[in-house]
Amino acid sequence: MFDVIIAGCGPTGAMLAAELRLHDVRVLVLEKETEPESSVRIVSLHIRSLELMAMRGLLERLRERGRQRPAGAYFAGIDKPAPAGLDSAYAYLLGIPQPVVVRLLEEHAVDLGAEVRRGCAVAGFEQDDDGVTVELAGGEQLRARYLVGCDGARSTVRKLLGVGFPGEPSRNDTLMGEMEAGVPPEEIAARVAEIRETDKRFIVGPAGAGVYRVVIPAAGVSDRAEPPTLADFQQQLRALAGTDFGVHSPRWLSRFGDATRLAERYRVGRVLLAGDAAHIHPPTGGQGLNLGVQDAFNLGWKLAAQIRGWAPDTLLDTYHAERHPVAADVLDNTRAQMELSSAEPGPQAVRRLLTRLMDFDEVNRYLLEKITAIGVRYDFGDGPDLVGRRLRDLEVKQGHLYDLLHRGHGLLLDRTERLTVGGWSDRVDYLPDPTATLDVPGVLLRPDGHVAWIGDDQRDLDAHLARWFGRPLRQPLRQLSGKND
Image (cartoon, rainbow, N blue to C red; front, side):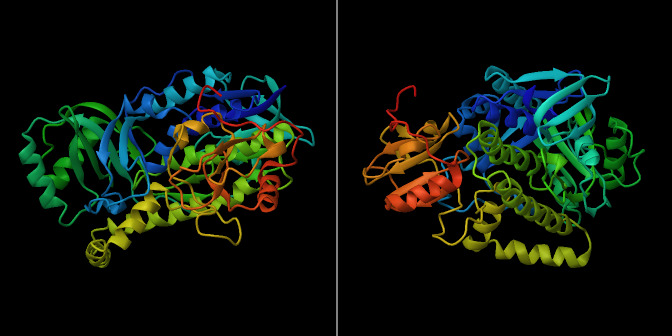
């Protein structure tokens, strides 16, 4: 019997498996595809996702295989530079092939002890008070304490669970791909600039090494159920631009719609949903993969706590309470961005107005923090604004704060050197550091890097330790040394 079975080994499923293995949870990942995805579609890792990767020691491996670009021009493609002084050490965008992200995260999970089985599709399941019986397409049955559906927009787990997926169906399809072009770059740039005066959904831009990313409306092109072809792209380019720019040698081709849906519930008993199984939206702003990975970080330590037996009664329910509103906000901002890409006079007037408003630093900053998720604040109740927010990667006497979060524990950063984690030392590490560049006396971080408490009162701290980390154990205090803890 496994502790957790995860359906789907995409970025969300692989990240969740790794997070669970940090806490010695027995994990099986089932992936219906027999081989990893081969297309080289480039995705963007935003600031918050880069921070999370740094917290687990994965960022350098990703950076070696990606291309850094300045932060900015995220919202509806409006070309504004990032505001100065963003509250992050990772204030850039990392473009990286999605298969590389999946492979690295899967390798990370396997290195930690997760088991991955390919060519295994979930066909059914039944849950009871003690666990979930999962039936595979071939008839094999497996048993686990929990099942998590990370199996994408057409999630079998969500459908079998009977969870509603309300929203809007796709109204506008778009072709997206990467390919080489046969005309000079300046000719492409001039024609694209002319077309984008009236059609913001038309994009042909450099993607490195002579390759162009092409994003164009797909109305009237082929059957939506069939994968797009290079001929489809050539046809639409000629229709919209009067030339196909001599495109050839595609790296990858895809077609997406603007369907926008959000699962009504992220948990039903012992079955949970994460990533695209819980929410779908257009890729405008490049938020999809990031949103799913962030789901995994939020869920992983909570589900592990439930399985390890120390979770407070309501801890697992906070997964839906925290992540559902975040997804709802992403869906709303992608709806707004899609409207701003319309060629109709009304949306274009709004776009011109917003373009001018984004010259104000506060507006530009607000929108960028929304897209990159560094503006997320979970509702932990009354308290200072910092509570519920993520904490930036501070310099501490051991080096960098995020380097101390690799194990997936909570962390008490104590500038007073008078506080203690006491009986929670098996779940929360302790770092006394009066030199830390922080303007509060003490801060308690959850394993996902969000601030659970600030202050200097031990009794108040104990109450918050119990709220997030359950009952204390009678164990000696563990203090971080900065070495291999």
